[in-house]
Length: 95
Image (cartoon, rainbow, N blue to C red):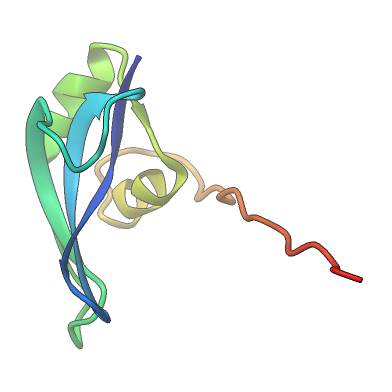
């Protein structure tokens, strides 16, 4: 299954993300099928550059977007719909 998701790059405490298309089971730090954009959450404007035509192409081929990428696509008006809640891990109480 193909996924459109974020691959973290950058230095410690200075993340920079690439929006990549890759197999779901494949390592994010390995080779991706295509890089379709980038996202910098640390800049003052939260820079997000996405290639809308290529993303629509991969979605038409059956690729799924991760919740975070889906919310970025809705924010950029590349896809229609509502933003969705991502999965969060709950901390367990250690006694």
